Image (cartoon, rainbow, N blue to C red; front, side):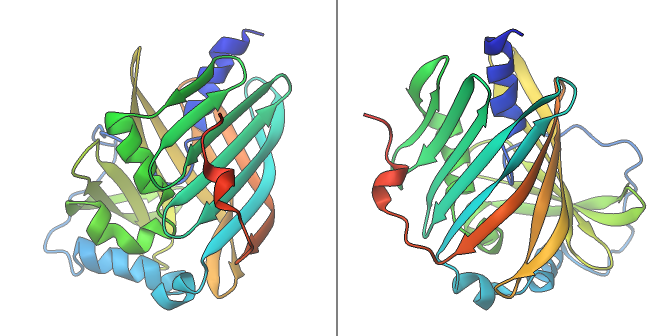
Length: 251
């Protein structure tokens, strides 16, 4: 196994939960004539469907642990996620022979790869991870994105979804798909610029469960050009004590 190849693909494929993406028009997307809802209203209904702003704001820290599987290669590992208000985040991903850490301590964004070493995030990559590190980023969409647009409807599996494009001040747009009946998030499309060109991926949250008054997806399936990665959360705790030093870059 070429560990360096999988290290790059592994990191990109596990850019979980709300990343960046310049999107290509999706096949089968239908334009909407005189939509009854605006993009802003759909985003707000999505927040309400999963518990509302107040329920989220009562949660000031989250610790999650789970398993991950890189399907085509048959690799299995673990993932740990530590998040703390307002914008601290640490993600630890491991498979045999490889550990990758991504962190933001409120000022510095960084990545540590046990094969390739440490580097600081800069420019667009830093701005993207800062948005991701914002705790409950979905309720802060007005601050994090300069423009939101309803661009059509599309099938996600057997569900019809509203398609919303969110454009930040720095970085590529994000395209999100909200169930037209439940308003739960069904899919997020992103594209990350890399040394070999843009890498597009699709993330599918599922297995929503209620915890602390908030519906949370316990499974995330990410489809990228080189792999399909499935993350399953097995443990989740909220309002736990997390020392700020955990988010600091390695010395």
